[in-house]
Image 1 (spheres, rainbow, N blue to C red):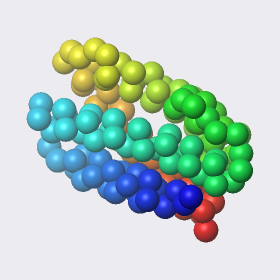
Image 2 (cartoon, helix red, strand yellow):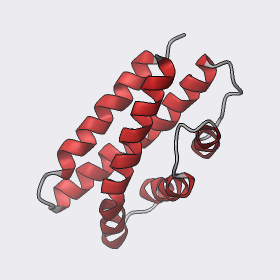
Image 3 (tube, rainbow, N blue to C red):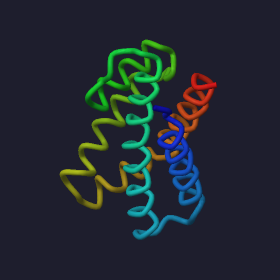
Image 4 (tube, helix red, strand yellow):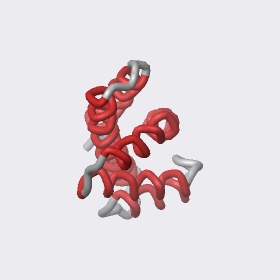
Length: 127
């Protein structure tokens, strides 16, 4: 089975995150950006999972495991940044407060770059 549909959704979610990050920050924009980040995050590790399956490699069962395998294969270069992303994603899911939301929002530009790079790597791997 091809990973194309998931990868296309991931690419689109990255574009949606990018489009909200150019907006002036308000509470609504911040919250929308965080939700878009959460979607990118979910699609990123699931796209890696599909790519591993297509390569005939062991399938990871968690975001952390998928990112670790992607790092080993050279699909991602910033393993520590991805570890931070995993931690922040867990925080957005289980807790909510203004300071945390602002902190995570301030990291979204870096996360966007990581997602954009991963899309390029996964598309090249698929080609």
